[in-house]
Image 1 (cartoon, rainbow, N blue to C red):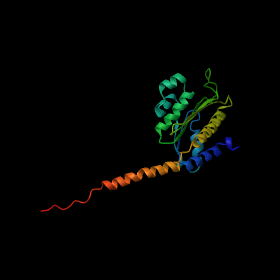
Image 2: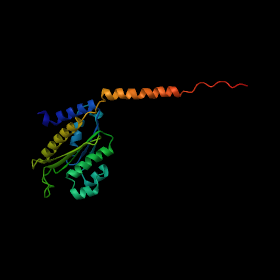
Image 3: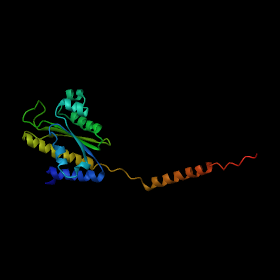
Image 4: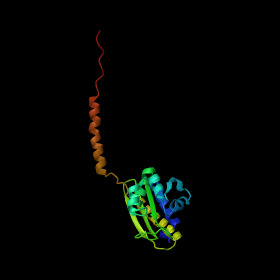
Length: 202
């Protein structure tokens, strides 16, 4: 099914972004660059994909994406707050329109109280200010499957973001008003033109 096929999702995303002239950067922790890999596997992706940040450690999240140390200490690397900060940080460090960030516990180890194996936070952000976050609890389905399913969900979220609201077109009324408003200024400029100077008498 195309909805869960990463290659089909990646192709659809690239086609949409290409048609809307949108660019993308990724910020990945537990997926280690798999989202960027899925996108760049498609020929011609270079006109959409700008870069990918693989920020596996807390130090990397802070140094490369600007995630505040206080955010990491208070909420942890695997959290809604950190995922959103990663997505925003990618926007701030790359001249792109859309970003996606993934942080999670792929397993088999790494679980903590309240944060089981399979917990993944994904956030997307847009240059126009839209931000979205989703929490997934895939369960202990195996490290590879957690990572694969995270890639699929990240591509789906990017697709939704890329489909976002289109810029509003000016209405005929506003265009006509603009034209009317310009004409008096043009005539005023003409009226202000000084007459030619008469030669002085000797």
